[in-house]
Amino acid sequence: MTAALARRNGELGFWLASAADDRPRFPTFSGRDAFDLAIVGGGFTGLWAAYFAKKLDPSLSVAVFEAERLGYGASGRNGGWVSALVPGNRARFAKASPQGRAASIALQREFIDSVDSLLGILALEGINADQAKGGSLSAAHTEAGMSRLLAKRQSDLLYGLTPEEVSVLTRAEFQAEIAIDGVHGGLFYKDVARINPAELVFGLARVVSGMGVSIFEGSRVESAVDRRLVLEAGEAEADRTFICTEGYSGPLLGQRRIIPINSSMIVTQPLDDDVWQEIGWLGSQCLNDSAHTFIYAQRTADDRIAIGGRGAPYRFASGTGGEGGTAESTVQQLLGKLRTFFPGVHFEADHAWSGVLGVSRDWNGGVSWDPVRGIGSSVGYAGHGVTSAFVGGRTLAELALGYDSPRTRLPWVGYSARDWEPEPIRWVGVHAMYRLFGIADAWEERRGSSRTSLLASFGSRLAGLHE
Image (cartoon, rainbow, N blue to C red):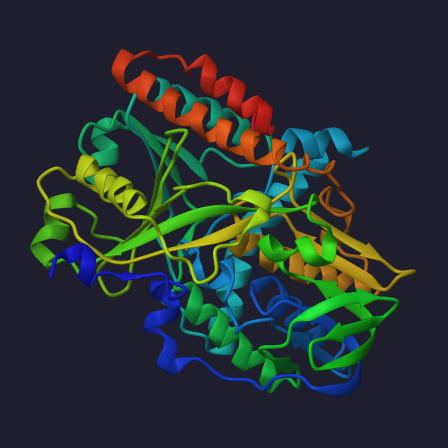
């Protein structure tokens, strides 16, 4: 049997599959009931919203409704980065706020502070999610890529990071951290931690269940209107409702407000100590690169490399991909990245999977709360979901319970992008953008230019990614 045939594919991914025996199980909702707060979505955002709502008011009756099982979506399938990356374009947030750049600086500082806040709650509540704060490394493989990283650092400094929080690494300094072949240099971000996302979902679910939150799995909410939730097997009334469904938000928030963009991952077989010594990856740093078709990776607690990238970016009519089966071509692309980084090492994929993240038309996330309708949402994290869910869930709880906090005044609160185009324009546009990025990467590597390809610049402006 070949390695490709022996490999596990889909099954919601490595994190959830490897923790399946440890996952808590919850009943399916049926009949009728009433709650002070109903939360749709059993991922990071919904569970953090439940946690903070109960912290603010322990007397609240809170229910979480998950259509499949906890962590089914991006929360159980992601790359496991707790980072300070803001979900969107900070310049656009600044432009939309009366406070201008100061508002985006406040947003960025909240995300930086939230990395340690999240880790502190895990320690306080006894949640073991293999968390380790080792920072992250961004690698440049071309002169153009290094130029982009330097420009990104300037933008980071403009919007609130300090020079100590994002530092420039020479080629030698980078290879002293991780010995990537052919790297030109890069950046080091201090405030990033690695986690096992499935263990975080399960641990957080146990904590909120212990706080008195009712959790229901296999309980799909078909509509949430006029403080009434209609489910497949019953109805629930709620004074307040939070929609926390990220890439699966179309049926409840509108198919053109948030679309599901696909991201794929593989995890290698465990690597021996001599391999880790050879590649020099001896700590818990996370890793990404400056390519337009970028990757993200971590060294797992059980000594594997988990690495992800876009793969096929978007399914027609906002398909979400079920349990995450992944094309062999995508697996080979990700393995190819590893073999380019570390050419002396033989890598095999042990498990491959895909999932979807929620993206607005301008790639900016947003938290909304309508006190008249009693309904709110936090969505559009665009791949930066672990910390965004923490901040977003906390903000929703504060807004709905009438608390004024630094978070309720952040510029992503009340922010709304225009709708995505209808199909087939949407499908053509997304695929064209990623095709431009792929061509631009190949052009930069072939030409060795110090300037970003005009094709990539056009694609970035089309997507609203430039700051």
